[in-house]
Image (cartoon, rainbow over all chains, first blue to last red; front, side, top):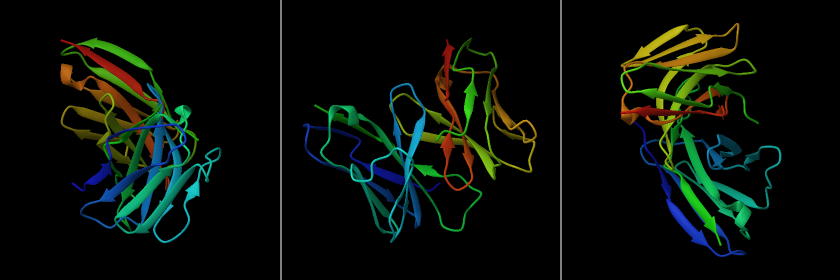
Length: 117
Length: 108
């Protein structure tokens, strides 16, 4: 099946710094990628939908300036957590879907565990 | 916002028993999917059922969908310790909105 690679898998950063998380579709072109956040023992919360070549669509309550999303190519979307604070510590997961496949599964990355100290 | 809710939130069974999890959702869907997540890992796709389907099987998994009740169930038969994980349903239109998840523990 299709593979989505997410990097890094774990990152620890200091408060006030920025962290970039990459999501790559390895064997297909993804016009749309999704970014999720998951708190411990909770479900995945959709943060934003990333569209190649255009601005991301953010869910209500998600700070656009805090979570910068760039989808510059059909195989790469990045999420940058700017000026990170301890409350940003979480598990972030991306997913991607092939274009023209409305009724199929999304492919998920393995997630990035961010710890802000 | 989350679309679905799974029930129960936690389930503990003995190995060999069957496990049933339910998912309810709120709006019209194109399809519904079940995913599995081991602790601290990404999601693994288990099965997709389209809105015009009522039942689907895959190995030890059986999924039903009742669009009139906006609900789905996932049955895992002859459970194994390795089935211990969290299970989520996700609905599709366009974005995937996840339910709250069922934490399944299979005791050897």
